[in-house]
Amino acid sequence: MSGHDRDVLIIGGGISGLANAWWLAREGLSVEVWEAEHRVGGKIKSSRQKGYLTERAAAMVMNFRPEVAGLVHETGLEDVKTSRMPIAEARRYLLHQGDLKALPMRLGAMLASPIWSARGKLRLLFEPFILTSGGKDESVSDFVCRRFGREVLEKAMEPFVSGTLAADPDQTSAEAALPRLTALEKRYGSITAGILINRILRRRTACVTDTFSFRGGISTLVNVLARAPGINTYTGHRVEELVKQDDGWFISAKTADGHRSINVQHVIVSTPAPAAAVLLKPLDKELAELLGGIDYAAVTVVHAGMDRGDIGHPLDGTGFLTPRREGHVLTGNLWMSSLFPDRAPEGKVLLTSYLGGARSPQIKDWDDDRMVDEMLRTLRPLLGLKGMPEMLRINRHKQALPLYHGAYQSRMQSIISRLKNLPGLHLEANYKGGVSVRDRLACGRSLAQQVVAERQRFCAGRNKNANERLTLSEMMGTVHVHETK
Image (cartoon, rainbow, N blue to C red; front, side, top):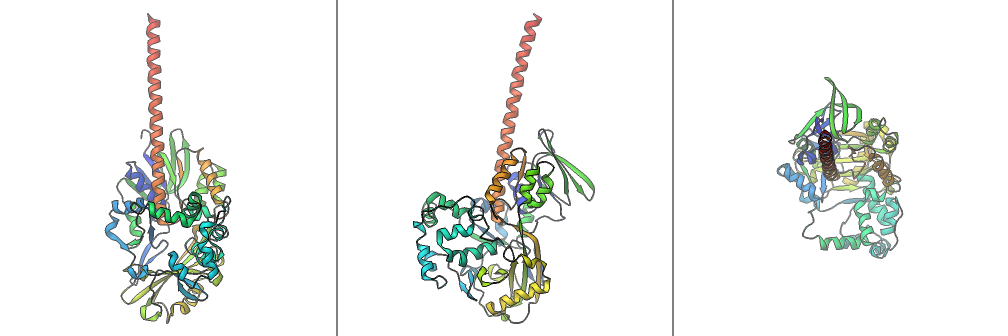
């Protein structure tokens, strides 16, 4: 690390930056994290109010990746992990023609469900025989309609994309938003066949799918990562200058105590795309324009705590999603007190609603009263609500989630290409690789492996050059001896 204060500096202390830091420190690298705000975690923040535990952003981890399970185990988070309660495993609901209907997840149950028409069921069964393939940057809507038919899009995939990604499936890149499904089609020619083959081949080795949170909420994960050995985390550090040097990077930031600077071999920018664009514009204007062209959706999260007796629905599931054609700005509702213990006091329930996204961008200008009125107007007939909530918390996110809209994969490839001109600079945030906590933890590991490999190549090249200089020196020394003779 000659000439460098640290091996790696990470700009941004959200879940992406902290995941990168943890994996890098695990590899033995010295790491600093600079966060502009006065707390780490980014949008993630768990809060207690009147005995209710609410999440400002991510509410849970839905994991199927072994590396994420390994991180939870190695950090000791296994001891404070809270798994989904049995009542929430039973059902996922969908708003269908004004009523909540259980949405089956297995093929047999789907075929028996009244949600699907006879024509829709036949089209679903026909999927293995679809031989067409999509074009570059095919949208989610086009991909799902081509593989499964429009009914699956309207009743299942559109609510999922709108509710969990806050996106518009007509504009969202299928390869970016549904990488597992598009990969199955490419490899096996059929998603159904690919799933069956993978289940047979990986039955004994695949990571068990697990949905969980932690005691104290998702902030527990953030805090454990930030305090991990080998990671030096600094808040209130707003980066003002990023300068490329011969063998690394010079970075300076404004802090409450004045300016602070550091020299590192690698720098990882883990801020939202607009902030990254501003920071990188002096280095590469085209790269900054590519980042600045990534749009974000505004989402408002409304938490309502109520008496259990004021709700007629059994709340025997995870919650529900609302298809676009139902005409609601509320895209989904999670029954948090059914999902995890200790989310509400005894005899109470916690309902968390999501409003807005690409479907209804206009609601970002609504005041709090209108937000609450809209939530209650939607929930009253569906859940049999009586009375008013005893606890309300509203979290507004003007830039909640990046939208994987348009020719998104082409944009990502162009960004990767521009980064090749800036060795030692890396970008890692939720606009690439997925927005979930699971994706952020997994992508952090991939980037850490890339940084370690680059360092090894750098050291090998430096040693080779040193050996070559030594050999040349020896040769010159020999010539010098001959000349003196």
